[in-house]
Every structure is written in C-alpha cells, then in structure tokens.
Length: 105
Ligand SMILES: N=c1c2ncn([C@@H]3O[C@H](COP(=O)(O)OP(=O)(O)OP(=O)(O)O)[C@@H](O)[C@H]3O)c2ncn1[C@@H]1O[C@H](COP(=O)(O)O)[C@@H](O)[C@H]1O
Image 1 (cartoon, rainbow, N blue to C red):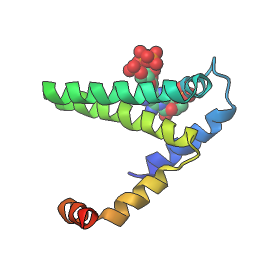
Image 2: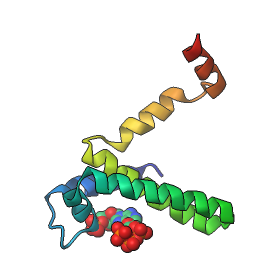
Image 3: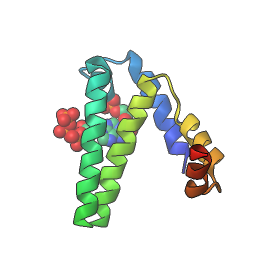
C-alpha cells in the first residue's frame, strides 16, 4: 500500500517541469510555498469537519486530500515520503507518553 506514496511522489517530481496550465500540481508549485501551506491548512480543517460529521467516506476523502497536499509540500521542500515513513518506523513501539517523559527529563 505504501507503493502508491512512492509512485505519487515520482509524479510530483515530474510535475516540477510541467506546464501550470496542464497540471494542478504544477499550478500549486508555481503559486509557491504559501499557497501549498494554505491548501494543507484548508484540508486539515475539512478533515476536522468531516470527523465531526462522522461520515466514514467523507473522513477518508478529506484525509486523502490532506495527505496529498502534504505530499506536495514534501516534494516542494525536496523531501520524500520515505523520510516520513522512516521517522514513523523509528517511533514504532515507542510509547508517546515515554517519549514525552524522556524530553522533559
Ligand atoms: N491525488 C491527487 C489529488 N487529490 C486532490 N487533488 C486536487 O486537489 C484539489 C483539492 O482542492 P479542493 O477540494 O479545495 O477543490 P478546489 O476548490 O478545486 O481547489 P482550489 O481551486 O481551491 O485549489 C482539487 O483540485 C483536486 O482535484 C488532487 N490532484 C492530483 N492528485 C494526484 O496528482 C497527480 C498529478 O496531478 P496533476 O498535476 O493535476 O496532473 C494525479 O494524477 C493524481 O494522482
């Protein structure tokens, strides 16, 4: 399933050379970082609203929009989704409460 993240990241790299008139992603890159961040914020808010509505399909749809726009952000910042997956992997099995306690010591 993580394969789709890698394939999508490849498309997002290709779109760096695409015409903004022919590609949503190229258009977002052309608008710049603030426009990408605005989309991430909007999609996060829409995710919150979908969760409050409690309709499962709507939550999945909005989370997909949010993940997609965070992938655009990563690509814009020359980062790959594998870096995020590696960080989640590093944290796997480490209790959030223990991690927090180790920071405040
Ligand atoms: N997964 C996605 C994807 N998810 C969401 N979106 C777009 O993200 C936008 C979401 O914004 P909104 O819901 O706010 O809708 P909107 O009002 O149309 O958006 P704005 O005009 O406000 O920006 C919509 O235009 C969606 O079509 C996506 N656009 C592209 N992809 C993937 O990216 C690839 C490259 O896309 P292009 O660059 O357009 O070829 C595609 O083949 C897909 O795999």
